Length: 388
Length: 167
Image (cartoon, rainbow over the protein chains, first blue to last red):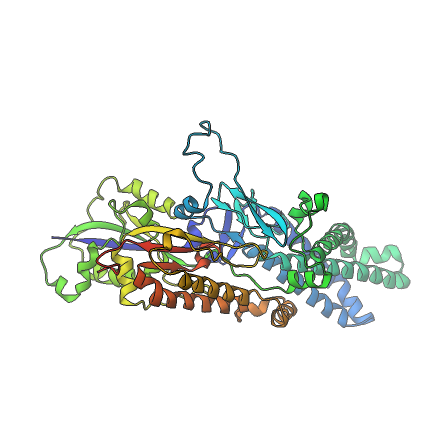
């Protein structure tokens, strides 16, 4: 008579997500792999503001108004909050299709019919849908095995399909998509305001001081100001320009991706089917619309079970808990379970597995678990991959 | 030392985020999931005719013909569509939520749930109830679309055993 020895390892789902994202804080933070430029952004913003608070604020608070540093702090806080929100959140990644869905919904038969020469991809499949009297083409994504919803696009850097894909921004270290576009827009807007604010008060500060002590002496007294002015000057042109561009996009309810591709440029009477033809309505939808939830359950738990047969003496144990007789149920996939069942023994079975585990784990094992049966390691990886 | 061989079971005990599952399942659902083999799966696709809002097609799939009547199926999809429309409604309430959140630099969502998340909970509850009352007795189960990225409604059809209810 034998039973099964179970050792349990709890993982979070983010550890097994495909794609090229990095996760921090146990799945709470999601970013792209290359974060160098993001650190530069942080450094520039925090550094410039620190210089402003050190050099300008004491003088201006006394000579002009204490409201100046207070407003600067509020602006700085808003900039940091929106930046971190943009960088750390899920931009609207579409989870990849499981094998069943890919077979059912995907382009069928072409490869199977042998029409495609070996080694070549079949031609991309396109589905046409009509949205507000416009024909929109939905392309098939071979990586994610889905027909992309309208406005979605695959980001090559993060290797994910993202809904309402705008662009991949290295400055924030993440894609900008449906879920974080408003934070991105508010970040650029507030950063423009902060840059203009710091630049203006730098000039005011230098002017006021120069009246008292002369221009050259002023620059010697407050070297930080020079640095701030230089940073702000270059930032102004880029960030204010970017804000202006995105304000234009928001008013037309377009994405950067669509703008670059010229999807709704008006050629052949093609118009943007998503626009409400009203600037206010478009702005309200983009900036004040519903907050879509993440389709990736990053912090959900996965249990990885290691099963090994353990001989136990014929015992009273079975009488204690009748559920042990159910260990032969096909709930736990083994080499006889058909492949498509394995991946589908998925989120539904939480309560059941917990019940089953406890009686098994409570049995004291008579010895160390024996060497694993052959052929299983390959299967483990097969099941792991299958799941995605 | 953990043996290297092992079999992975994906299980959601509890999501750290907004999706908390109802752990108490009815006896028939438990039985079915444990002991029935999956015959096939069908996927109800999204309906994009009104734009990018989350709506599913009401088209009655041929694989379901023997299992459930059209009205019942359409009723389920219609209710789901209405619930998603409610979640994504753009109006006074969503503007207020958006503006308030913006004023607090979105820190308010550290302690508050968004309207969409509240409706998602309603949807999860509705699907569970439908599974219990309508689909499980007919040997099927619906998966919550959020598990599939709101792309499809996955309906798993289990093999008929002894009249379709599992043992």
